[in-house]
Amino acid sequence: MSVHLRIDGPLTIPAMGPCFMCRRGYLAVVAIGELTRLGGPGHEPIEIPLYACEACEGQLTLLLADALRSPVRPYVPDALPH
Picture 1 (cartoon, rainbow, N blue to C red):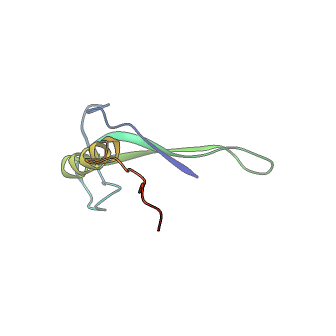
Picture 2: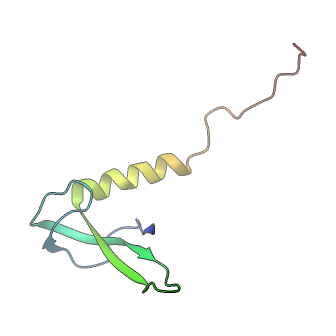
């Protein structure tokens, strides 16, 4: 299975439902991606939409920004032999 997240802002009109991150129910949520499994011999392909509340969507956006940010100081190999 794989998770595909699209965090570029709300993709759908907010609806009421459970958040997949904080597991609270009946919140205003937006679709942010899907959980997928490819089909194969004896397996049906599955796509399950994932919904997140506003707080968790913000948390995922910050995680994505941190992951895409380049390091503050790039790695430089040591020039002196040990």
